[in-house]
Image 1 (cartoon, one colour):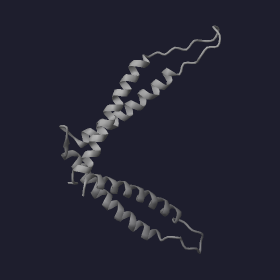
Image 2: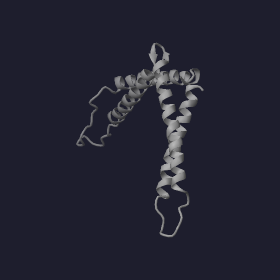
Image 3: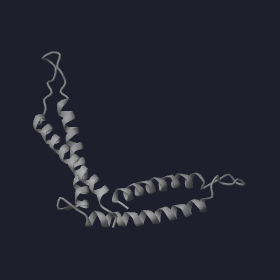
Image 4: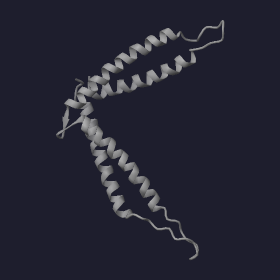
Length: 150
């Protein structure tokens, strides 16, 4: 099984467990004398099966992410880099949006609003980060479809 396939299955299991949570909640209580639409005991068995497979896959994915090297870094390091870049990029973009939104004055008596940062430099930095994020994500996606799950 390729790493990407394991990641897809893991995502499916997470969605399945979330759906089971809702089904369990809806069937946890009924009016006296009524039967639940689904047997909570059967649903709990499904939870246990899905959770066991999720635990197995998560451990295997983590082992693989630690062992596999791309461009001299483990996949774990690349994932951390990607996450931090995405966070920083969203902060830079928010700052750029605010710094670029200068209110037009109709008369000289209105308060003049000026940017406190160099928008041009920040935009270049954001563009560079965006490119690095895209390249990092591409390297991760390629590795996910290249390497087998350990």
